[in-house]
Amino acid sequence: MIRSFIVNKYNGKEFLKVIFNMSILFLCLGFIINLFEEINFFKDYDVGISVPIGLTALFVPSLLYNMFPFVVLLSGIWFFLKIKKTDEIIAMKVSGMSNFSVIMIPSILSIILGIFFITAVNPITSTLVKKYESIKGKYEKDQEYLAAITVNGIWIKEQNYGKINLIRSTKLENNNLLDISIYQFDSNNNFLKRIEAKSADISSSHWKIKNATVIDKDGKISDDKIYEFTYSSMYDINKIKSLYSNIDTVSFWNLENEIELLENRGYSSKDMRAKLQQSLAFPFFLLSMILLSGVFTLGFSFKDNNWTYIFIAIITSVLIFYFNRFSAALGKMDKLPIEISVWMPILIIFIFSSVGLIHANQK
Image (cartoon, rainbow, N blue to C red):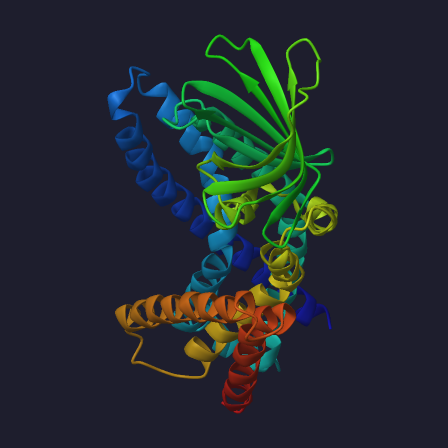
């Protein structure tokens, strides 16, 4: 019992070291790649190197978080190969441990790491990404065009024919913005007038607004009611529904509130519900990566050729990545329920790993 505890403690410590080293490697690679992208973005701005470096530092932790399942897969392969090449696994088997027992400690640690990343790391990375987008947004060429969903409604700001329009709506219903108000300002931000309407059809970028009331800058309501007019906007129903294009800015702890907010405003919450399910499945995804790495290294032998294992790890990572994307796409297109589209890839990996582990445990 004491011997087993010492061996498990050693395995856990060594596995965490591999995880740490692999994470540092991914951070460095991600930092270098993203830094070149930021430098390319700011090539026409006189900002120096400090801004790209600062933005990269804000963005890379989120990149590591999204790639962590593959970090765990590679770390598992590295760890199991290490104890295999140094014949430590033979000593463990002599002491009465099976391959399943060797995989157990990394599996438990992967679940703990998954819970830690979701509950503690994700809120930090989401805040950093939000800060990243806020800073970088100041340099976007189309920064005069903004849109957001808040507890007070849907807000849109855009320039139109030399005027600045601030648009507010209570919610989105089908292809219509309801209870719409358009506040119009000149180029010097002087208030000109306000247009009120019950709804606006935004099927295209040429909104159709009916039964509108015009209120001038002095608060006087025009006697002439506009029965129908067209408002040209850069937003249509598809752009409005994609306001949450980067859901990495939403913390795990805020997902349910954001889902409720989107549904109350008439927006589709598919992406946000998928994000919630992915977060709940994250620890089990990490576990499946460990089991898969155990199958590849302890269940099969490739004459201890490291390049073969590296090739397998890369191919497996690519296949899992695109399989997840394909499954998620089926969920977004209503071909599968969101829950099934998220959990199905993990379940398939578990089934494959379980069969492989039975084979590996017999060795």
